[in-house]
Every structure is written in structure tokens, then in C-alpha cells.
Amino acid sequence: MNPNALLAPYAAKSETSQGRQYSEPPPGNRSEYQRDRDRIIHSTAFRRLVYKTQVFINHEGDLYRTRMTHSLEVAQIARSVARSLSLNEHLVEAISLAHDLGHTPFGHSGQDALDECMKDYGGFEHNFQSLRVVDELEEKYAEFPGLNLTFETREGILKHCSKKNARALGELGQRFLERRQPGLEAQLANISDEIAYNNHDVDDGLRAGLISVDELREVELFNAQYETVNRRYPDLAERRLIHEVVRRMINVVVTDLTRHSQDKIDEASPDSINAVRDAPVLIGMSEKIHEQHIALKRFLRERLYAHEHVRNVMEQAHQRIVALFDAYFHDPARMPDQHREIAGQMEARHAEAGRARAVADYIAGMTDRYAIAACEGIIAWGQ
Ligand code: MG
Image 1 (tube, rainbow, N blue to C red):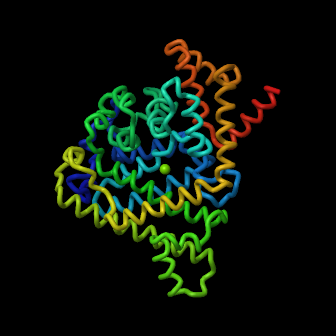
Image 2 (image 1 turned 45 degrees about the horizontal axis):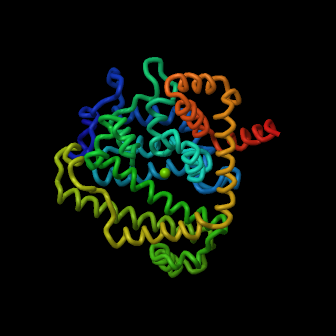
Image 3 (image 1 turned 180 degrees about the horizontal axis):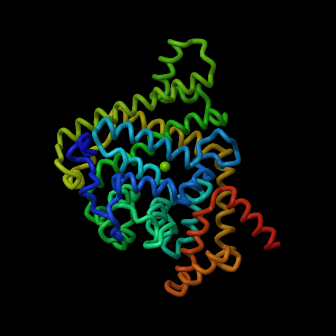
């Protein structure tokens, strides 16, 4: 069967891809986007996601989401919506699996700390770093640096970008300067990320005992499903009840997203991925569900991410990243040989900013537990 038979005209297609930075022979029996997905799964950065924080530090418990399980949940949501909208499932999967590859250890506090350390050297932004990982930092192939992914996958990975970085990126950064949209697969992976973490953070927050079912009942999206489940299964044990509620919440949002996006696509009726890029954002929830989704996001920000326990752990994480950066930046010999050599080469080209970037790349690539061990080594060494 023609692999494009199930794809809408506005979906990304392997044959009309804008291609790779280094040209390669076409893949044998895979599409270009399947090849991208496979390269991402085989990358070192992907494997490290197992030991990187989503909200809870990796050693806090075995049942919390990590960046890896988060990325898999994003891909699951995005693929099911892609199929309903006749979009390219392989592309959306590749983008979803790669979207957090540039994340530092310790989640957002790690990223903020590294950004602070890098403030005089161009800053640090995890989303931009994800692109840097697939474009430059992965060392896998004889013929090119990075993974040499297609334009469409790279376009999807880069969700936001400063004007300065956009200009430096050339064609890929162009849309941020012209305020154009990426393809629908990129738009879908982006919103699936939000749906995934909003819902799994409810589950993880409850599991950790940092938020309660009673508190969550203030949130409409949660309460509506809670009441339905409670009415139907009044004697259900709490763990199963929570799962029933969360899976129904995902279902409500995803069903709404699919319907509303299809309506918007029908209205704009783009006849190609390029027409999509010129149209307004077409993947989104209805106003009513979007408001509920935002209310849940606000609840999590105020009650979970700002919870004293999370803040304390994150404050410690922040200090660790700053300590690592200071140590390596002032004494690159503390880094393993390979990274020390890279720092030397980058310093020769870009002075201190080059050395700082090499240090940031090294730290960003660390898993939580590696960063903790490295920090303990450094602290012991410094004493
Ligand atoms: Mg994410």
C-alpha cells in the first residue's frame, strides 16, 4: 500500500521533506521520519532521559515519571491524535521522543541554574539545546556530526527561540523572525507535551502526597471526572480511582483537541505543509477545555511545583549545577579528557564563551545521579 494513502494533503510527507543538512541516500524500507525516530531512539542522549528529572529527582522513587517516561507519554498522545487527523505519525513520534533531549539534570531548576551561569556567554535554553544535541553533540556517524535529522523533525524540536538564535540558525530559525507556524506534526507534539505533563504530574503529585484529591476537586477538569468515577464506582480504592480519573481527563482533553483541530483545519483547508506554515495555529483545544487545562496548569504551578518539598530539592539542585559550572569553567582539567579537549578547541575559536559552552554542554548531558556524584567529587576535591 502507498504509505501516503492515509495521510491528509496537509500532513508532512517523506518524499517532499526539505531534507537533511548532509545529503544521504534515501532509506531502504523506512520513511525519512521513521529513520529520524530510529536515530533518536539509538542516541546516547535518549538513553540518559531515564535518569533525568521530570518533577521528582530520579532517586526520590521508582514510580515517578522521568524525562524518558514523560517523552513516551507525549509520543503516545501525539501519535493517537495524529492518526485521527491523518497526520504523519512517524514524524510526530520522532519530534515527541526528541523534544526533551537537551534537558539538564534536575529539571527546570537545572536549566535555570545553567542559564544563570551562562548569562555572559549567550545563555542556556533547554529547547535550543535539544536541537544542539541532534545537530552537533551526538557522535554516532562517520559522515556527519549529530544525527543529521530532517528539516521537519528539527523544526518540531525547536519550539521557541530568541531572535538572536533564530538569525544564527538560518532557514530553520526563519519562522521565528517571520512569525510563521511549523507543520501540524510540530504543533501537535508541542501541545501533547503539555497534556502529558499536566496529567502525569497530577498522578505523581498525589503519589508523593504533596497534593490531595480534595484539593484537586477545586479544579474543574479533575472534579468532573472524579464525580463520574465516584458515582459509578463508589467503593473504588484510591489508587485505582486516581488512575480512572486521570485517564478520563486525558481522554476528555484529547477528544476535544482532535475535534477542535479538525474543525480549524477544515476551515483553513491548507493543501500542503507549506500552506500550514502560512496559516494561523491550527492544532488546539476548544476555548472551554483550554481554560480548564490552563486552570489545572495553574493549580500545579501553585500547589505542586511551588511546594516547599519540591522547592527545597530544587534549591539544592540549583546549587549543585552552579558548583559544577564554577569548578569546570575555572579548571577544565577537572572534566574527563574528551570534554577537556573540546573545551580547549572551543576556547581557541570563541575565547571564554567557547569554554563556557563546552562546560554547559557537558553539564547538560549529565543524568541526575551523575551530576550528584560529580558534585560530591568536586566538593571533596575542593576541601
Ligand atoms: Mg516535555
